[in-house]
Length: 252
Image (cartoon, rainbow, N blue to C red):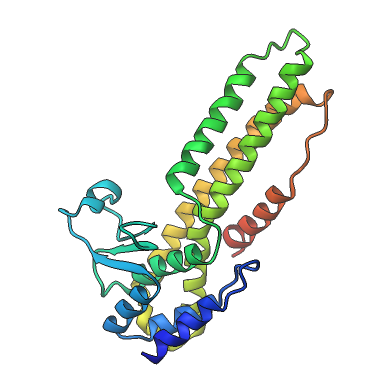
């Protein structure tokens, strides 16, 4: 019970403007707890924990054969659901638990909604580019529409990558660091899961890199028309994200 009380105090004491959490402390507390204590910790945060099977509705909707765990925010009158196939799969359970901690301490975004917003923004940009005629000088109105479409796409992409895809990489990097630096936690996390995490992390990094490459291609094409019209900001939000991406995906 003492562990649960400490953990709640840490979360309640978070400065709302800073949206910061002591991820190391919360993770170590969770990892060193028993299975029953982990369930209590999850429930104390307003979350629900489900062990799922192939007949579960959420499995059918969200799980592929390779999926071992999942966090779904704001479901079933709770702050979120942690779904795992096996409670003894500690790496997966702590991974989903960290997603929940991030969700509880930052602005909330719906992944499906943001993915749809990103998809629509890309389609709008591609449509505007498709309407351009390289043999004509585009009107000021059309150039303005192109500039707005490009900026919107970039902002939606960075938001989606930062809030969802890069979060996967950050969590894996954090767990790898704990495994490598704390022997007692390495035994709990397991060597097999540790090695597998590099494959999963690399897959997510490649997905992010592919999206960034696509952005650069569309941006380069757009700037051919926009260079004589106006200058587009290299937005600080993009620069900040790119630094994080390099830090988590490019450094050995």
